[in-house]
Length: 72
Figure 1: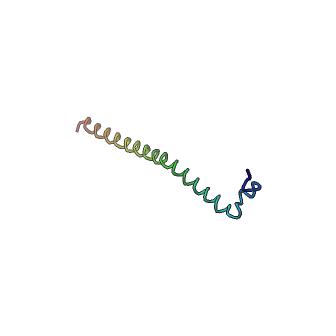
Figure 2 (figure 1 turned 60 degrees about the vertical axis):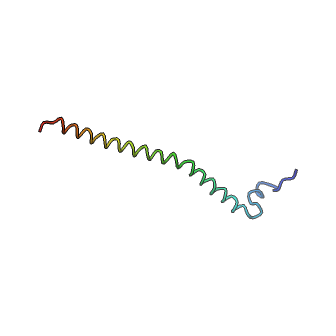
């Protein structure tokens, strides 16, 4: 069995195409990581928005109860 490259430097250089090949791998890795993280970030954002809406509706409900309970 014979290896394609004589050493690590030749492997990284890939006969002059190393910059293109490794940049493609890098971009692909970044996109895959982004796609993996995006749903978690979106879920966290939605949970914060739902908590904010819940606090607002709870505050409105308490204000309306206080108005009904107070004599006019």
